[in-house]
Length: 501
Image 1 (cartoon, helix red, strand yellow):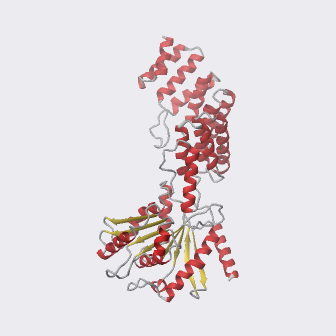
Image 2: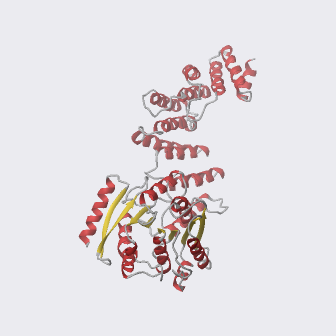
């Protein structure tokens, strides 16, 4: 047995090291005296089975409309949409109706079904938790017959799962199968956070909808601060498309407390973060992920309250080697908003190193690197023009390479000209950069929607300012007139024009 487990462990590790997104495996069951096949599915941003952080697990039986490929794709999609769902391992077990052994007549299991439950409890789940370092927050997903089997687990094995997603569970008569909570089950669910989601389609059989409502009624006496129930009768859904229409609602219900919001009017951002950490650990046995979805709300809260110390603590908490360059760049930008220049320099420096070494061949890596150089020049070294100018020149050198991921929008020329105008530094060069910008890059209509646009009236204003610093007011005046023609609200241009008239 030990040798078999070692082979499984080795096989699992080798498969994951080859960057596959799923692993087909099997485990011999001493209870069933047979091997049980199962497949593990990993979301796209899964960090690996040797990750120090823990992850919850979604367990399902390969029955009805349940497929692992679909569940994996949906979890990855929801996370890309920044829905607050944790990175979850998905385990889909091959099991026939006979192996589950559930009886519609009695609501009980056959001898083989009991052995299968024993296999889940004592063999498969402990193996998954040890090998993949998962948390003990486990959710069961079932459809039709496998949902009815899941209801047996809910009634008779309360400690096995903390989440239940039951899609169109089957019931053949009013008392078949019975659904009655024992005193032990009631006591357990009144004290342990548990999530139950039931869904039936509008066009499914009435008896299945009645069954879901019966479950809702039976569990209605449980403590709603510990037991969380939701029933959906989904419009346009039937027995075959119920998973597609229910999965988002089901996962949102199950992971409803995995969010960066405390629902408190807490003014101390550090206490707020501590409360969220404690809640997520208590319910899901995991930590908040160190990603944008979690860190941005806390950072914005600190900035809103002008809480410099709080922002420093928040960013320290969310620091991670897995953060991408743009995450670290954001950390620096947060610091600049509260004038934490040394911290901004630190994070922007980390971002630059991350991008230069790992992300120069990625979609936004080079653009983010340009942003880091600009943030350092204008935010950190705005009163040290030598250093600021050097960073902008680094940006120009990068811009003049053939990197295919760089937008040829000319912003580096604008930044150099603006910096020279603000600091009265390298004015002649700065003026030429601005003239190049308005000559070759002022048309921003073809830029992608996410790219910020520089108003041409601003460029004209800085050209005029540089001409004035070169004591050439006659050349400055036409550009100020152009700036005001484009934007009569440009007060800086208006004041400068009045000064030279």
